[in-house]
Image (cartoon, rainbow, N blue to C red; front, side, top):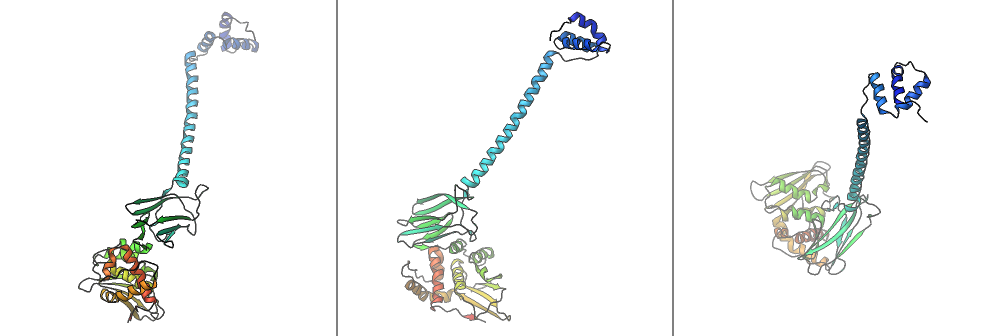
Length: 355
């Protein structure tokens, strides 16, 4: 719309306009002129007691507002991108990359090793009862006859599921096979997780109560219930006594598993001479099993012979002069452990109950 008022006319009208004495039609015409005339706008502001910012400052304020809005959007976008990257990183870590698998605890034990095929070790990795872990990135290395199988554990997904996994390892030129940090095969003998743990706790002195406690814990004596440990080290023969609190009947007791653990403890505790497992029956009457180095050494020829004759397809168990010699390698300890069970099962060795 054309503005008919000149600056001179508007300046004459501004005093009355500011005081509100002009008509609505005049107000409209003045305001239309002020919208396009910075000079008259400043004059109106002076008359009204206002100090409007110069045009340059107004433009600068508008620019800063735009910059602020633009910066706010950039901050929001940067935060969103950061959150997205972190979420993707966490998801990749949990479902794709994972962490090194560790099978060195009894509770998480989920693989078996066997030698059904000559000169080959077959290892089956299987899911837990509640499969909340999957394994991936399998790797098998062989350095100077030491084979190590490793993997990484992740959460199950479409990328890695919980299906069974097999590793078939040729044993030509191989001395040991490890799964992570657990020994599973040595010199022709498959090593159980329990014997690997017991061997790793080997200690030369029965007087070291902490070390002896680790041996006993690794031996799984707790399958018979709670017990207290007592050491007699003031004079030989040095004895380890485990006093079990749960009532046990000597007539109904099957000692094969217990004597396996007792023999293994004698082998790996260097100067231990005797081990006793003491119980009470339902009537509170005490009874116990005692295994000594001297007694076991005398029985070793029969124990080892029965084992070797029974298990013709496996590597023969060596016959040593002392049970202590079986603590020099995990493979020998494993075979002593198995031979002790078979000796009692076959009646070659008969444990005696002591009252």
